[in-house]
Image 1 (cartoon, rainbow, N blue to C red):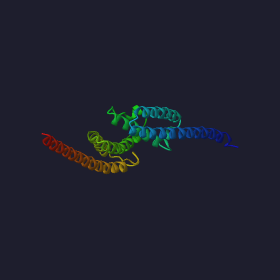
Image 2 (tube, rainbow, N blue to C red):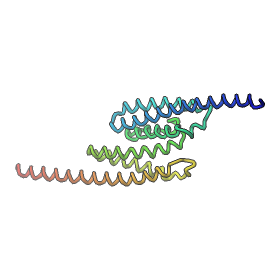
Image 3 (tube, helix red, strand yellow):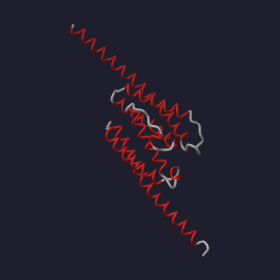
Length: 213
């Protein structure tokens, strides 16, 4: 048959590609799982465990990137872009909360597109951090989280590319705007409530002091 040798060669190539795809799927699941666990640990204040999860995620990411050497299209199709995004989100969130330098896409080993959407998702997690800070009466930390959210929103709002270039970014930025507004209201109310409580406590202590005198 005239096509026999050609088809055998194609079959070998596709089998190799499918094997890489399966490997990338497994690695991507591990990245997503570890990144999610890292975010939970960050919110619990368990930064050491968060770092352990992120190191494991980094190892899986390195494995996925090696699998993409012969098939670079997998960088932008399948589960890997989502894994890149969630890894970026967790790394960026940890850096922001711990007041460290924010990692760059190249430093994380990921493309810029999922990095940008990872920034947006990290800003969403900062709202949760701000609310947790409010519950602890740590209003200064809540204000800091809000400022970081506003900074991220301002930066991402200025990035104007179509969906075909950076998928889902516009939608995430729209969500960010609402989250920033809601968080600003929550932090402002909490700050005002704290000032009122302190005023009442001060007035009560003053009255108690005068009675004692």
